[in-house]
Image (cartoon, rainbow, N blue to C red; front, top):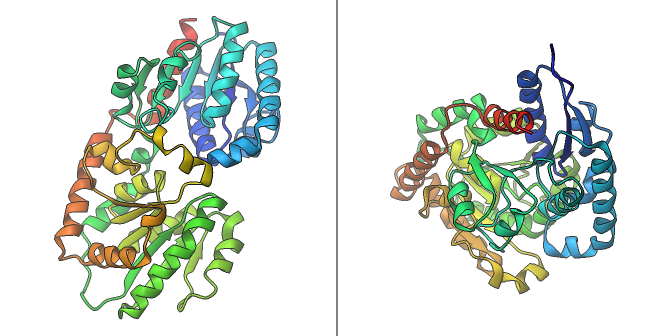
Length: 388
């Protein structure tokens, strides 16, 4: 006798969250023996798997306090609309992937009406970085958190949050990235060869607008200091025009790429990277590309800096619990300093480069799990559903 088909409520607003959701759903299909029905909010990748999104997921893919504040009336309307639809569907569980300011409010409303519905948050909110009081409040309407960073379960427990499981990170199951890592660790660079520089100004338009001009100034300084520079900028298709416009005045035009295959090739050829703070710094660590991390906060966030509790925003630093990647924020971002950091990191004889790569090895060891993240996460979701 086969079990009844399961229905899963889901909220996944951003592109990265939808990748996680798709991988999890593929594994859930294997473990349940059927593809679950979906109700909630998500983009094209989830819609291809049968989700009829309640509204366009791009509406909740917001970054920075300013953009959230501007969108508050719309967000409150969408929160009620999403919660009502999920309550009406009475799914077997509610799975929240990203957009925590939105998805956790949906969960709270749903839990008020359906108190026995299991609620699972995949990817822990950054309570370790700011507003740690969120952890304890979540416990009232989130039953399990599936963490993708190894230090998060201990922090969540310390803060009185929901039961949290480290399931691993999807990047650790990326065989192509692992091949790049091994290749980079075994590669050498001649002293007079070209300097292959990766420039990663972020996946959001606001990040590109705030960082790419500063990165461009650093590139020009490297040119003026005699380096034969080859620069690659991986970006998303929707940002190509913006990136091309902002790099039009560079002495040497960068190569702008948009596919995953091109990005991995750029990682395999890079000697160093200038990167926006975020998940990409972890990816660079797992690819063994020494990097400098930068970020500019929006004006409203500057007013809320007292709420920030983390000692670092670079994921490799937090995972290894020691400084590995150098970080520069806001007015600290000086192109001359960035250029000199790149020189140091791209010199294969420099102790600074070796120190970063040794730190990356520590990160890689800390991130290991016995099974891929999606497999571990799916096993917990299935167990929760069947125990209902």
